[in-house]
Amino acid sequence: MPAIDVTDQTFQTEVIERSLSVPVVVDLWADWCGPCKTLGPILEKVIDETDGKVVLAKVDTETNPQIAAALKVQSIPAVFVANDGRLHQGFVGALPEASVRQFVASLLPTQEEEALVALVAAGDEASLRQAIEIEPGHPEAIVALAELLVGVNTPEALDEALALLERIPESSETRRVAALARLGTDAVVEGTEHVEATLDGLLPKVKDDEEARQAFVDLLEVLGPDDPRTARYRKQLTSRLF
Image (cartoon, rainbow, N blue to C red; front, side, top):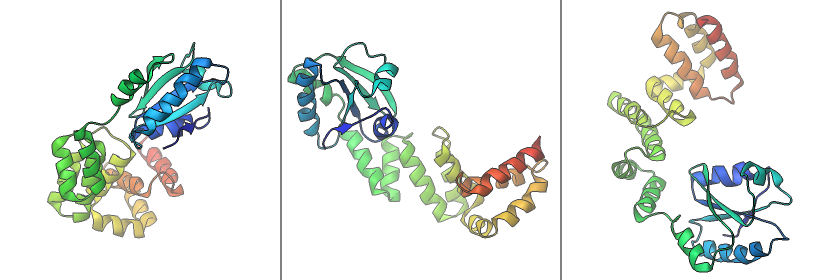
């Protein structure tokens, strides 16, 4: 995979968000920098040999000063690594190829990590359960398995889906799938077909009836933040509660 030229505007997407699925090496360089011209081709060669298991992002500090300033870069070449949405420093200066190879090798996934990726990508129940056996708190596997269990739509499956989601930190995805699990597939279909009538019916009960309040919130989670009705009904919920 060729190196990605990253700008101040694309850094969040191309580096931070991309690092959620693959390690990203960030090479800060400039055209006037001699050592940068030595290191750059070595990084490109070594990272290209990983066949996409590591990605190289290049930042020209002359045309993208905001990134260099945010990272408090004092000299270049400077190399950072983004992994799982977090950024940390790799090294400064032009290293020889052997050292670069050792550095990149430390970023490659282990056999267990590669197995996990393959199991989650398979996406069937058996593979997802196997992934969770290997890593009980794997967020992607848990959310995917919980959603499959919601589709089964038996009380046992819905309870298991909720129990699984409690293992991992809350996110927009965990809230959505948990809402589906609490409502049940049949209730979701019925509710979303007549969602405004359903929400209007629940609204007078939300202050004193915990089940009604939870169902109301869950329906809004299923609608999602992009549905204009979500914001409208959230305001009405707040006015009822406070």
